[in-house]
Length: 203
Image (cartoon, rainbow, N blue to C red; front, side, top):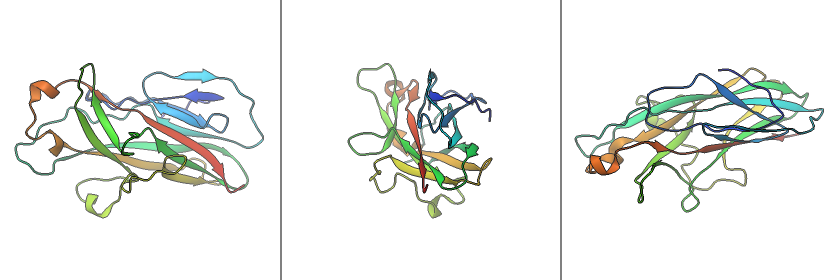
């Protein structure tokens, strides 16, 4: 994962159905704790402080090409990603990372069909850690209770001495939502935006 240090950054990573996973990454800093995971980035200058940090987030997370299940049963697909504490110039405290970008009506995450008048939506969940078929039932999504805090859903916290630490994450989508749907009507590209937010705590 490539880190890019900037004073202020707005980043995003597209959740789509293409099978290509980008190797590049973007950063969150204490000067600009917000970042969207989309394709483009906006950079603005700001004044650095004595305490600073750089958190590296993915610029894209990809589920690949989804498939319609033949029966009305669970059919999960997984997409892993990493959030890294690239630089922590701190002697105390920690940096907490949250995920925003959820639907305002039910506080959940959806991939939305693009370029159609009445788009089809597919729900997905965000987990801290590596999740797959072997341990899914033992894990709880960060958005499971539907009640995000003021900064969004808590993803992880890096202690001040955890520079270089990587926190794994997994997006999980149940293709059961596609069962019984007209494939011609729901075909196309799907995307969503996860907005990461970071903040210093415990100083």
